[in-house]
Amino acid sequence: DTAVSQTPKYLVTQMGNDKSIKCEQNLGHDTMYWYKQDSKKFLKIMFSYNNKELIINETVPNRFSPKSPDKAHLNLHINSLELGDSAVYFCASSQEELPGTDTQYFGPGTRLTVL
Amino acid sequence: LAKTTQPISMDSYEGQEVNITCSHNNIATNDYITWYQQFPSQGPRFIIQGYKTKVTNEVASLFIPADRKSSTLSLPRVSLSDTAVYYCLVGAMNTGFQKLVFGTGTRLLVSP
Image 1 (cartoon, rainbow over the protein chains, first blue to last red):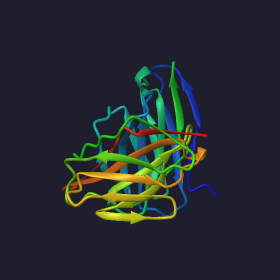
Image 2 (image 1 turned 180 degrees about the horizontal axis):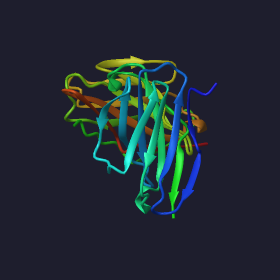
Image 3 (image 1 turned 90 degrees about the vertical axis):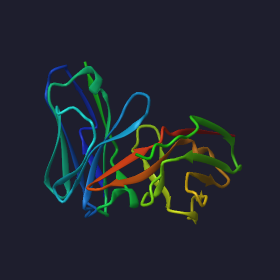
Image 4 (image 1 turned 30 degrees about the vertical axis):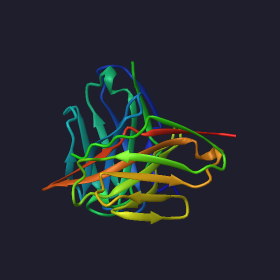
C-alpha cells in the first residue's frame, strides 16, 4: 500500500518535447506538492495544491504547470523541455493546510533526463 | 523567507551520538522546524518536528533554543543505516502564501 506514488520512475526524452509526471496519494491528505531536486541535491519546492487551489507558486517557468483532477492526484506537465529540466522530481502530500506545520510524505521520485 | 544553513557533511562511527545543527536566523513567529532524512534514490522521510524547546521521539531529539534561530537534530547511537542526507525545513507563512525552505542538507556518513 504505497502512500504516495509517482509514474513514471524514469523518464528520458528529447529537448522540446512535452511530458507529464503523475502523482497519487491514498492518505486522504488535503495538500500536495511538487519538488525539484537538482544534481547538487538541492530540494526546492515548485508547487503546492490545497483542495484544487494553487497556494504556492515558486519562481518556476510557466512551462511547468500542475494539474489536479481531484484531491488525491497532482500531475506535473512540462512543455518544451530543456536540458536544465533534468532532475529528480518528487511529489509529496500533507494533511494540514499549513504545510510547514505538518509532516510531508514524499513519493519515490521521477528521474527526468532531457537529451 | 527563513533561509537555513547546515553543515555540508559529517562523519561518525557506529554507536556514537550525532548532532546536526541548522541555522535559521530569519525564522518567523509561526514557523515550525522539521527534519527529514533522505536515502539515495528515495524521497525524503519525516524524522521530527518542533516549535520550541525540546522534542523527542523514538528515533531522534530536536533541541530548539529560546531565540529559535537555530535547531539541533540529535541522533543517539547511530548505525550504518543512518548514513543519509538530513534536511532541515523551516515552515514560513506570509499572508496568503506559504513558502517552505529546505536547508542544503547534511550528508552523514557512519562508519564501522
